[in-house]
Length: 169
Length: 339
Image (cartoon, rainbow over all chains, first blue to last red; front, side, top):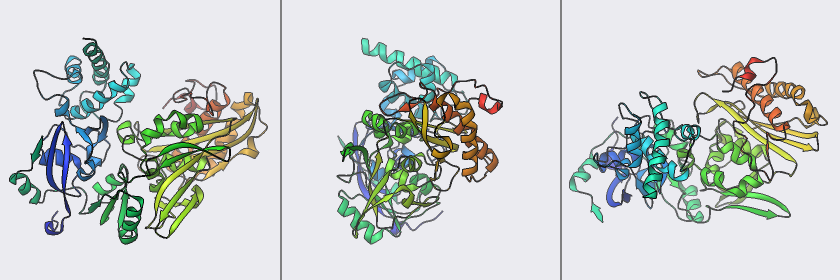
């Protein structure tokens, strides 16, 4: 698809992502998910369906999970964005949610995992002690095509345990 | 720490990467007046952008290609969510940039009009409700949307402003077709107003979808008025099975019925619902199947509301979702299945 880049409306924006403030020029129509991946090279945020169904692109906006494919980067200014890299980007030192996915075998191919991690990371703050049913409801907006959901639901409960242990230490 | 974009970033931006939406310009007004000026100048080819949870998918699929978007999330004065007392009757005022999530979490809203919170829990998923706005959903006027139906069922209204003035529209005046409202291209809905439900009313909402949070195949909202053990009124609204949120008033048909006769009366309610709606068929469900589902849901809801412990109502915070008794003794097998 070719479009006239000379008339493409662009904006100079400031984006706060994982504690870093970035200044960049982006086309107005560029989605937050694409700016994160292409301009900031934060490729942990995955792009699946690109219309809000699959949840792979979920990031936290001021601590609340949102779909980064349903938001323009221009309109994300003034908010604090947290991607999966901001939750944990050290394989030697995973976050509590990431550790829970390891403990419970909550992933196989891993494509959907960043969306689950950002969603669950916010959820267990809201509900520190979820039942299995609540855990299932909490991840109902994220699709996984290989592991199935049993282990992911277990990972939600395990993550809540780990966070509670972390808080009490 | 501020990281400046590098030359490589600039080059990357020049490269015409494939982007889902077609080219457009985003305006970020900060006042209502500024928004109305923009709408007056460019409203005919532009669109108002609030949470974008319905609009951005449409743009991503290029089903629409507006020249301009007017992002109203930074506009001052349209972010209020309050229960006000007008002439002794309470009402909930929801500003244009208030997210579904804020409405859903408000204890005042739950107390005043529990149907709103009950239906909101069926609006997509929390991640979508964190961005999506209640007023945006009403303006979008999707027959699959829960909020236009709740506005109509509870007798709500919206206030719209343009440079030409301000007007108030009831739900029945606003909704004129699927995805179509009577608003002009220079008008902004500044807020929606949901009246409080009366003290004796019980409310319920339920829908069936193929996946959690997806568009409903059929959905029903209900307000049952009760005096002691006697039904005094019943109004039903529908999701995904009518073009606009038409309301079925069954007051005459069911008034005087005893709550203990719920099972028999439920058959009448289901039949009236099936006759009232006009669903379309598509790849997901035939028209007949949707009609059948609407009847089943209406029957279930009615019986639930007739049980004293099964309904939300004014002044209670009961979450009635999932409280359907798993086995109901009727001849209809579908009634036994919990979707």
